[in-house]
Each structure stands twice: as C-alpha cells, then as structure tokens.
Image 1 (cartoon, rainbow, N blue to C red):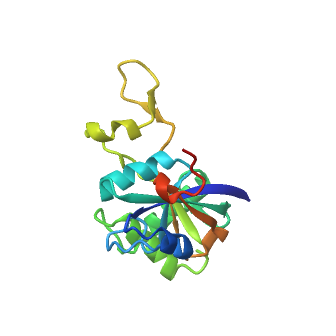
Image 2 (image 1 turned 90 degrees about the vertical axis):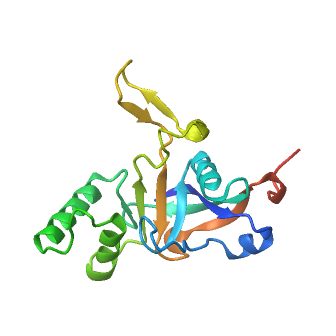
Length: 192
C-alpha cells in the first residue's frame, strides 16, 4: 500500500470551514466521466488548478488529501496492465452480448461493472483522460507538461498527466487529512 496525495477542486462559495469539515464532495454532474463518485486529481496540483480555471474561472478552492492506494482497492487503468486487460475483456464480452456499441461511454461501462459484476469490488477507479487539457487553447498552455521524443515528430511524453481518481464512497481508500491548499487566504499553513 502506498500513500498518495489527491486534490479536489471546488467552487469557492466563501465557506472554507464548511469545506474542511465536510470534504470530500461528490460530483453532481449527470455526465461525470467515471460515473457517480468523489473526483480527485492524482498527485499534480497543476491539474487541479487547470480544472478550477476551466470550471470556475478565478473563484475556486483546491483541497489536498491523502489516501492509501493499492491496485487491490483501485481499478487502475493508468498503471496496472492487468486491469487494462480486464477492462478490454469486459468490453469484448459486453459487445458480444450487444449491451454496448461505439457510442457507449466509459461511465456506462464502469457503472455496469459496479452494478452487475460481483467480483468487481474496487473502491475507486484511476484513469488518464487523453486530451483532457486541450492542445488548442493557449490560455491553458502553462498546464501542459510535455516533452517531445524527436524534433518535428508529434509524439511526446506527458510528465504531469491529467490523471483522475474517482472514489466510489466518501471514505474509499481510507481518504483523510483534508485541508484547503488554495487559495492562500484559506490555507492556515501559508506564510506571507
């Protein structure tokens, strides 16, 4: 088991005490990428800032937390190739039963696994949404951390990728130690 740092981006409603007492907060979007749950950015606070600006303009809060990460508890579609193969097999099976088609979203597959597959007992899922941070928006260029492999070739290394972890329950992965990291005026550890 490894301790992992997570960041949750929230709209700033001027209620830092409420946030620290009640965090984390469930995503309430109907089109949440990974289904119902508590969404976090994995390790890189830059991604939490990017999402704050995209979603809330200049008025956002970033909470920092820790969790106990293991691939026994988290279905990891970023770093566990066995999980990736399991996901692929699930898609093949669902296609063979005509349960999904080319328009089926990731969240529908995750929801199916959670609801219908008894041995899918994970507490969370971890993914990297390719092209989450648009290549075409100059305003967000500073949030891209990419290096090319070869001059004049399109391939690159994304060394701070936009990896998300969705916790299925509020206490999944033993999430703990919530505190506001940003903005500075809400962070008691900030020194002027």
